[in-house]
Length: 133
Image 1 (tube, rainbow, N blue to C red):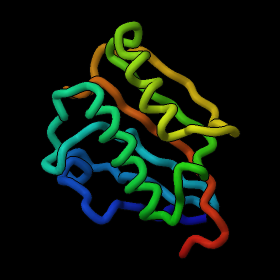
Image 2 (cartoon, rainbow, N blue to C red):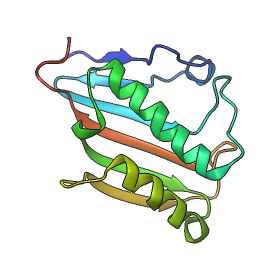
Image 3 (cartoon, helix red, strand yellow):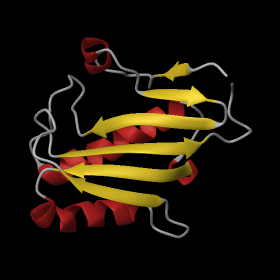
Image 4 (spheres, rainbow, N blue to C red):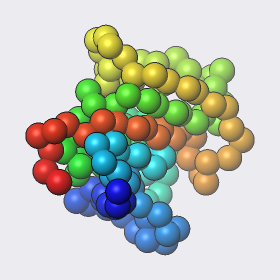
């Protein structure tokens, strides 16, 4: 099985600068790199709630580039620089994105560094049979 790099239409220089793909398609699975709340130029959004919303928007763009939606996500790992103080905001945004069951698996990890960001989300999704190859 070959790996296929996936990039959203409006990818920013962050991927090339750091030498990684937004996602890798392998068979019917999509492995999405950690998505952050970056603005178009790749810099962090300073407002935390907006940063979380942008991370989900960037995730959605990457999923869309592979023919997936949020409903195709099966596993989530999120990274948080201050989980105790951020959790309420994250849960409010999460509830907007995943508003009904079945919810994806989710593992949340507290970290002390995210390259200037405060939230990062990476996922594994199943690519629908109807998605273009």
